[in-house]
Length: 148
Image 1 (spheres, helix red, strand yellow):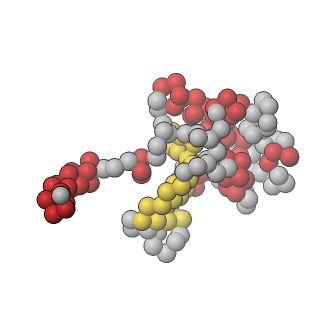
Image 2: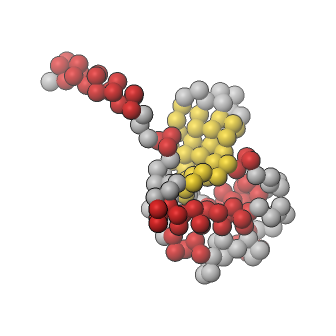
Image 3: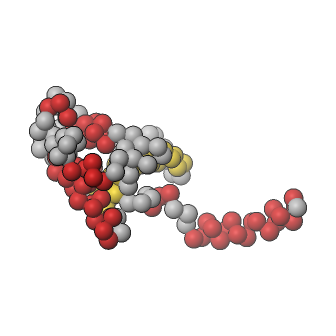
């Protein structure tokens, strides 16, 4: 899934070089797009080497109009999308780079509460909670008794 980590170097295709207008379009930058992309690159390397996940809080970083969309455009869309509906909706979108995910949390009024880039094998919001699995384990015997 996604682009191999070797493509994140920026040396061949300018993915990580937002000084190149062809790679980034004609957006006025605050200068934070390139550091964010480089942070993703280093975090992905850390994930591969040590297994350590990283979360980047995009709403905590000052950005000019259009920069968030530019980051999303450069990261692209991968093969996996998930929506979670619990006290508002959360969407998890894999980028075209394996291990790099865009996670957005919204309230019931569809206002964005949080927007993150997670560099991880699987975003934590998608992992089953132990208590939920215990409930499922308790429910399965009745399902078996009623249907088998």
